[in-house]
Length: 449
Image (cartoon, rainbow, N blue to C red; front, side, top):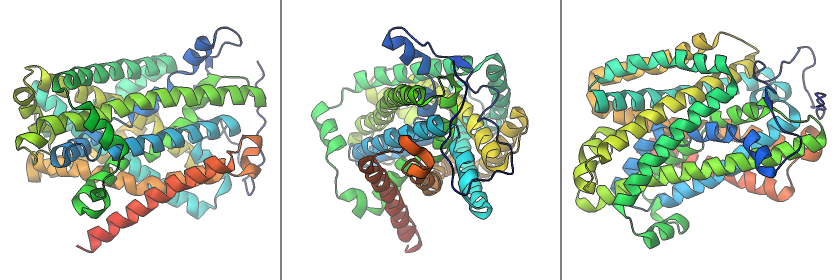
């Protein structure tokens, strides 16, 4: 199999530094069959999409989806659908960038942008990773408390140990890491499938809410705040850096024909995985709408409240346990992708390599400290508000990842024949514009009182 990498020329690309492959320890480490039935090739490429989908159903989504379902019923299902469609498009573009150029998004930014811009983009991405990690710490700590009675502060401190879990899996091989992620995704999917079956929501109302938007989404400041939080929790900026890197773990033929084939299968993989994420996100909101919105519990916004009320309101004794198990699986899963994204961002922007366990403990420590402080001062209510706020912060970081990505993949000077068409580029810029407008709207409403 040819290993020659033919990259398009990069205007203003720096030539004074030797660039290493993205995640070089696992780059091109997973064999792809040259011949055989189509599903064998699809199976070889399956994995990165599911790892990316983890970020679209992490504990941060739970807070925003619960609040949205309890307060507004099914209205915000349209936002979940819209953000998921945005995610499918953006992740496909991230995979295309990584496969076509052999660079992840962080490396592409370093190659093209001036150093001051690179530094600002790196800071923005690090803030996004910390905000995501904040959600994982809170979600995992809450799940440990609900299932085993461990105090929130103790649970938050225990989450530091997951650094060694990721290290163990990475040492066994990237496929082991992917298998771990998929196994936990199956648990999350199964838990919510049972709850949706028991809740028996009206299918017609759900479909209408998914595809027909309500004007209240932009006119009601509270609804808009939660809607932007849902977008921030769903379309996650660090996932674009992650996906552009981990698609390169496949040993596809590094020729134009091989790259086109790889882009096709990688896009199929991420699309299928994100449809699964859509089901999970929609399920959280739907279960909250059925259990809380129509039963006089519209003020439920905290995961602990939902845990206490789900079983009696749904009439299923194990509903609360299923909810907490899915939350724990979600928190554990998210640690994997946050660790890899942090490594990719640091190596891509700074060319700085530190041990994975050190990187993980550093990021996790920055997330644990505010959780411990807020929990000590304000208790569970404070952590619930911090969880929703972290997702709004994530949304604020989105333009710093989306705009460079769309700019790169639509530029023929950088992508050559792999540049996206004008129609797809126009759609991608519309998505970027929607994200920017919603963010400016939120900032205006916040500072205007």
